[in-house]
Image (cartoon, rainbow, N blue to C red; front, side, top):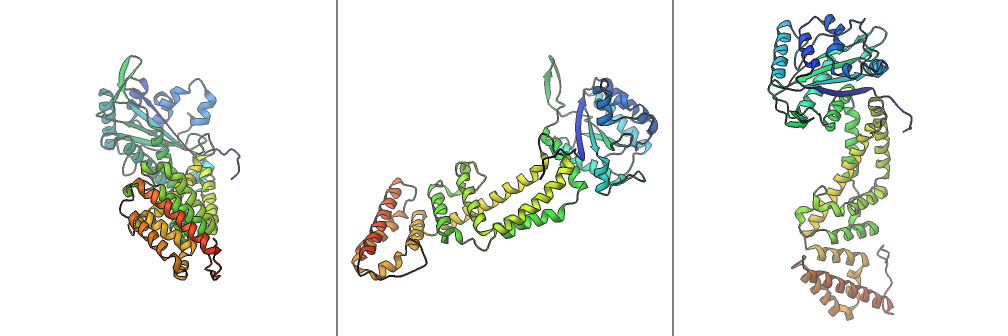
Length: 432
């Protein structure tokens, strides 16, 4: 991805005014006016315009109000098409009630770069035709997200209108609570209802709009398929126990995990100290056995990042990179959980230390050595007894001491066996 600055295709901003503000009252006055009259009077009731009255350039760039234009849609809300006369009166009554009860009024603006809308097939610059139904749908998705995130699904009322009177098509949404549920805060030595909207709420709203514009379902399913079917469920999963380097990492991790196997889930707090080891093992496996799948995933993520870059722009927060970050976190979480699941199964079929000693015994080829060298039968019997003892209480410190003693005995046995002149050469395909 190049580092050039890219203006966002979608901008979402939100402000609020208190019940006593003039913008609140004037908005109510204009709620049931004719569309053209509302359009001309827009600067009088917009919470945004009042904030930019001393900066004409900023007005034009952000909202670009043109009082000579009458291109504005009728009001619409949560369902259906444009509001009827009776519906406008209903919402005017709701906003009036909200003001009398001290509600905050939020004003959200969703602004679009026209060329972005045109690229996505929602706008034709030659005919000035906009897909109005789609814009209403996007607004409703954004508002459902906002009210859910701010816990106002049952209490809020909102109305919206699409404005074409700027160089960027945009949608204005006004929101109130007829019976306020927001917490009170103290501001300038006075108590008022909290109006600030969480940044995460605004991000979710914008995400709903972007995802509604750019149909990425096929590509996103393809990315998920690479992660789940090709990497997580790789046919080479037995390499974690059979590959020498991976097995060493696998057993090193297995050895230090907490005694309580119920905590062996990647996102649990108990796993936080072990996540670097888990991720390192996942990375090593992917690089060795899934490199082609990883290249395929990288190309797919690059494509998605290019699309999101046009929608979100570059910006200080680089939101267009968030999808890649989320998917990679998902990959390592899923792979980490699959590793921990494998370890839980191993721990319940013979005990942690017994399984470790068995795996190491397999690597060193001592099954053959024991069959060929009768002088070591007594030693082997002692080692077997140690292994059996380790199964009784894997959480006790004595197990670790016994494990270390067993490892030293195995190493000594190997050394003596190699020195023996009677030792027949063999090759079991394992480097030692």
